Length: 468
Image (cartoon, rainbow, N blue to C red; front, side, top):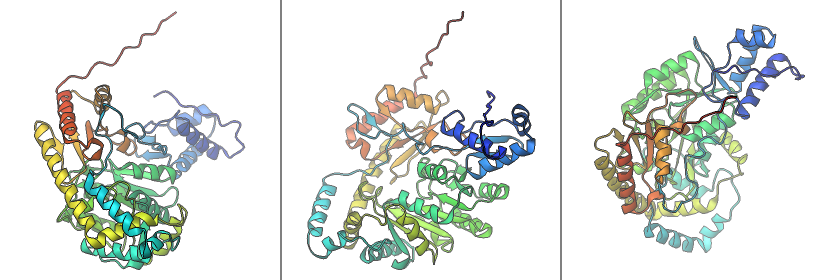
């Protein structure tokens, strides 16, 4: 590595604080990058003319801020990720002539349009309209929380409406839960490949983020025990149903084992169940095995429609007031309009109808994927909105991503999901939902991806420099 040397001479702060500030500034200015190793204590002390103890104190402060991670016997590495993590890998707008497998979004058709028209009509007068105009309570309107409680009880989660907080979707719920239990410098553990929400939250909240080894069922129990032994984990933020990006589905015995490890080591759990409603006869939610320490979050933006950004957050008994205080900091309360629509749909069965339609469509696409990529390793569950495709030996994920773009195909490499210096698997995520709405385009796209898999990567352009 090139030797990084900060300038701390002009700082009025104590030397250790000035050095920690310099590390943070270098990361923000992209002069230090995630995964980069910092100089050893002795090297940097010698170059700066300060004591080894001062460098050690500065590195400890940088780790407390969530900027770096120390690994015994290996050194100190940058792990701070900026809040724009993941940008550039997901298309924000539809591009003409491009087949887009980058953005996870549920399918929709006229069935959804008619459901919305009917909902708007029902909400135009009387009590529904009055509820949609309400501005309090911050926790969410009582009828909406009662509908949420009824829905959760149908899925094995026994919770009172008074213990539910209505949020603007799962990402909002996860942030609210994290903000209620974590302080800067605390350690949050996630899957080694995790959703970008966890990466962004760890960055903004100045948390120390630890990626834990995963297999086809998610977090590996022995790896969780070892990670906690090396550095105590305060919160474990997981997606047991269809991890994003790997698509892993955690079985009930694994969930029970993870819950017991958390209980034994006093680890708080945040369970993201945004994909759970898509799975018929699904495994019991993780929170049912450790209700005294689990914050459970779900929504319907993935199972029904993306604009239905209403989420349900419930924590252990006695935590609602703290969750509400954190939620107020992000907009005082969740939007009542989609919450009113969702409550009505739960009552009249529309949600069940739309979810069942979604399952049928996704099941058909999963069959197409498995048939097209039969010669390759593919994780594709019948009701999942994304699949995880391992690339052939000749391909690296970033190279495949870039060369697919030249052929007007958008896929997602693992880069935006990797925690710290975690392993970079040679695989890509394929979104199978609404970004490719037309079935013919979907099949044409996966066939073009399959054809590219069989090719050899094009060599990168050579750059020649003139020498005097």
